[in-house]
Image (tube, rainbow, N blue to C red):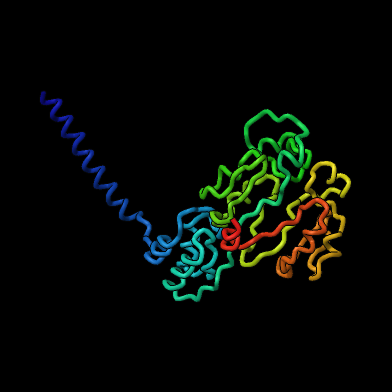
Amino acid sequence: MNDVLFASLIIGGAGIILGIILAVFSKLMAVEVDEKEEKIRAMLPSTNCGACGYTGCDGYAQALANGKEKNITLCKPGGQNTSDQISSFLGIKADKMIKTTAVVICQGNSQRTQKRADYRGIESCQMARLVDGGDNQCGYGCLGYGDCVSVCKYDAIHIINGVAFVDQTKCTSCMACIQTCPQHIIELMPIEKSYSIVFCKNEDRGPIANKVCEVSCIACSRCVKACPENCISIENNRAVIDYEKCTNCGACQQVCPHQCILSLYPADELMSKV
């Protein structure tokens, strides 16, 4: 019995000593918390999307707090409200943030283009693309397996009839979908005004593009000739529009033989049309 008591006292004493040692080391090794950094971090939306160019909200908050980063408008998900809060806290003037949305540059749904193979594997665009570039006839189009849907935290993107579609009224421009798309057909577009977009990424010559999709750009140059602002050019076998010059007059849309040019409207204007 005495042996058991003695052993218990030894173990208990060792535990106390170990606890004291750990407490001392925790004090010695503790990282000093930057109060400014903590306050800025609390203003950020905690999406950790990396759209700001940093590893996450912690990295951006740290850079702002120590003065290494002066741009307080990098948080797209937080928007103007977050920018204004940081501006007030740091005393730095906040420029007006340009509203943007992710846009899928493809209309090649299951009625407009066909599959060239029967893919049977993991439901993933990344995986499907590993098999000879994907199963679509158009090698530049949306594969439709929803990798972008999986990474979107805001329920802003869905697969509709085989093609991803972004609801710009929900999109926060976090760029998660852009970063995950293996086809590189999702782009961040400004939505401060209305303008026309060529919804096709196919860079094959016209006759080839024409065979694989009913709404492909075939570089016919009709839109180039019709544009009164001279803001359309043909680059890499597809029409490209200078959005800053575009007035959304609709002239290019009217002459496009494949109807692959459509208007992009600001979210509030879009909602008024629904």
